[in-house]
Structures are given as C-alpha cells and as structure tokens.
Length: 553
Image (cartoon, rainbow, N blue to C red; front, side, top):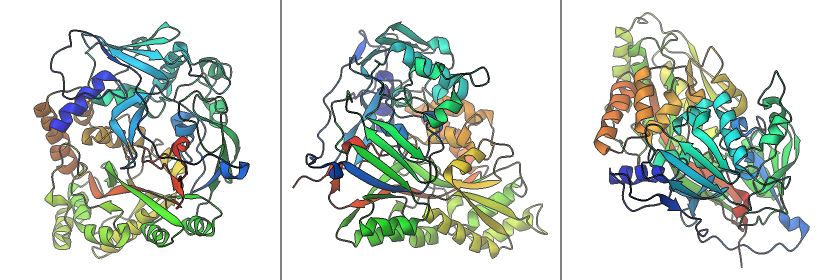
C-alpha cells in the first residue's frame, strides 16, 4: 500500500506525468513545488551512422493505421514518434521499461503545483517546435485540450479536466490548469502529460485552417495528415502497404534519432512477418505468437525482448444486456468452464502470467478469487439453474487479429464450452475495425481484449474497460457506482479509502456480478535483429525509435 501512496503523490507534481518524490504529502506544501528539467537517464550506446542504408529500419506490423489523428491512430507507432506531449517518462533501460510513476520533461521543461494544490502551471520549452519549424505555444496546448474535450472526453476527464475553462494560457510559454476540488495525486500527472490518447500536442493554426462547418475539429483532415512536434514526420502512407517516417533534421530534443527512416511494412500474417525477419528483409517484427517468439530466440541472428506489463489483463467480457449473458448463472458457468491452465501452458509459453483477479499481479488490490478456477461440474450445475437450462443460445466472441495467442486461447475456450453444449463462434477483426465496433451500437455481446494503462492501477483499468463513457468499454456496460468509484480512485490519497473502492468495484461488481474472466496477464514482446538495442516497453505497446540503434561494438 506504500507503493500506492507514493504513486499517488506523483500525480500532484504532474497532471499527467509526475515528478519523483520519496513520500506522499498529506498537507499542502508551504511553497510551490517546481520540477525542473532533468538529465536524460543513461541510455544504450549505439554506433554512428556510416551510410544512408544503415539509417533505414524496416518494421513488420500486422495492420494499417486507423488514421493519423492522435486521438485515433492505432497501428504503427505514429503517436509516439510523430507527436510530442507535455511530458514523457523516465526509462529503465536495464529493465527495458518506462517508469510510469516518474515523469520527465518533453514539451514542458518544468511544472509547478500551487501551495493549495488547486492549480498546476507548465512552462513550455522554448526550443520545442512543430515539424514546420513553428514554436509550440500555450495556445496550442489549450487548443489540444479543447479539442480533446469536444471529441474524446474520457482522457481529459480522468485527468481532472472537464471544462475548457480549466486550461488557460498565461502567456505564450505558460499554461495553467485549474482544479476546483484540489489537485489530485500521481495518477493525473501521467494522464495529462504523457502519451495518452489525445494528449499529443497539436498546432492550433494548422488544425483550424482545415476545419469546416461540418467538421469543426478537422477530424477528416487529420485522419490523413499529421503535423506534430515529435522527432519524426510522416513521409508517406500507402494504405494497406506501408507507412514511412522520416527523422526531422531540426528535431529540438536532446536525444537525436539514429535512424533517418522508419519503414513500417503492413504484413497481416504473423508467419510471413517471422519469415521476413529470419530472412533479413525486415529488422523488427511486431505481434508474433509465443511459439514464433521461441523460434526467434533459437536463431543466433535474432533476439526477443519480452517485458511484463502491469495491469495488462486479457479479459473475456460479457454484455449483460444480451442473451445468454443476461443471466448471471450463465456468466458464471462460462467463467468456470474456461480452461485457464491450458491457456497458460499451451498458448503463452512463458510470455505472460496466470492471474486470478481483475487486478494485475503487482497492482494495489490484487488478490485471487476462486471464481476464476476451472470446474466443469459446477458450470453444468449453474446452467441447470439458469433460465436457459433447456438450451443456451449461441453467441460470437470477437477478437482483434493482431494477437495470435488470443485466437489460440479462444479456440481452447470454444472447445471447453462445447462440452457444456454451448456453441461459441469466433470472429476476428483487424484492430481498427474491432476498436470501431467498441463504440457503435449495438456493442459486442462478448469480446476478448485488453488494455495496458499508463500506470499500474486496477481501478484505472476498470474505468477504461467498464466506464459508461469509455470507448473501449466495448460491451456497453454502464453502472453509476463503477463510474463514481473509479473517478474517486484517481484523486484519493488515503490507502484505506482506496481499498474500500477496490472492494466496491472489484469484489462486489466485477467479480460479484461475474462480468468478466481474466485469462492471463500479458507480456510485451517484440522480435528484432540481434545487433539492435534501445527497445523499451511503453504503455500502449508503442516504440519510440529515437532510442533504437545498432549495438556499439
């Protein structure tokens, strides 16, 4: 619980990325807290480029972009490489992971919390520029949050911003954010500053110049066009074929990209991605199955980077408004029928962990629940008690195609349910199309999905998965108790109160109402040539390629 308290304090320092401190504050500080720019942490050493060919990196990805708008980009890592944010996060290169509770400067060179904790002031780095050479200003930051509130309110709301008046330009280098209920703690820093959907800072003049009366926020234009403040620009995009990023020669950050070109080749079939990696035609391959990752590890020319992800729970979620899931006995029967051990043993092959809770293994609130244990006899008894005792209606499980192991897990679940006389079909969709279906009525009856939140917090994950206004809710679940409790969890400093919120949401609702089944906690895994370094797990499964380069010899 001490970890929860420390994490909470960090939010005070940064509404979206927070500054490290040794212990949580329980009373308002006497003086404002100022977080200055810090030196970049030690990084892997890469060799200097020797030829134009050495500057190109080819990455095999399973699917195309949904678009270039940072609110809905998906696919290749455009959001992490083309756009920049108020803050980033410090990196532990040895553990190959971002430290989500330790924000670091990016567009904001420093930030200051008022003594009463009711406002947060950001100072913009005077060197920060967009790719057209124009400076990033306070007006751009304010406009980004105005647009976010108009289009996709959830990220801003979670960061404590519910009204455009809360974000104010003091001068062209200063932005003030005001919080009527007092500045929340650690979690909000990560939410406001670093890498969240929509928090990529946009150039106001650029977006407004392409807005129309029918499209006041230029969403159509930004689907196919991008102007960011990050280290790369979009050189070209051939839908269904490839996306090419070019490094900016005028990139203002301290760390300069080694590769001048990142070429994402869109290869839907994972076997083909593996083949191209092994043949040397591509340098990096995303979303290989665990068995394919094992083949990669056996090749002396290749490597696998696999990092545990906090709160990355792959969940089987059911729509309580759709038959047969409108009967809790059926929901519980399906949960008891899932072959958890077989899924772990036969599909993950060590690239993930068993988890018997909606909370991640290292998240505050984790404990095991007996509901998530396979018992076919108990499942049959539950069906007999249900209103579908004479026959359970068939249904379709929808899965995004980018994860081969999830297809295998679904097949194992399908076989187990057949033993109960339940017909479950499996439908695969490209991720962009799958994600679109999460927000279009009718929502999915049942789906298999995950989300690795920006920090390791069970209730924040629940807000995204089950919040009434959350787009990745996918099943349309709505419960004011869940909404209120998860919102409150973001601002509470009291570990006892947080534990009560976990009990209300997790014990009484997620588990008590049998809304979902946690299949496993996934690792982030990527395959690459042996002589590359700098791959680091970032929430969202993105890669910042300015850190990647050949190993120094």
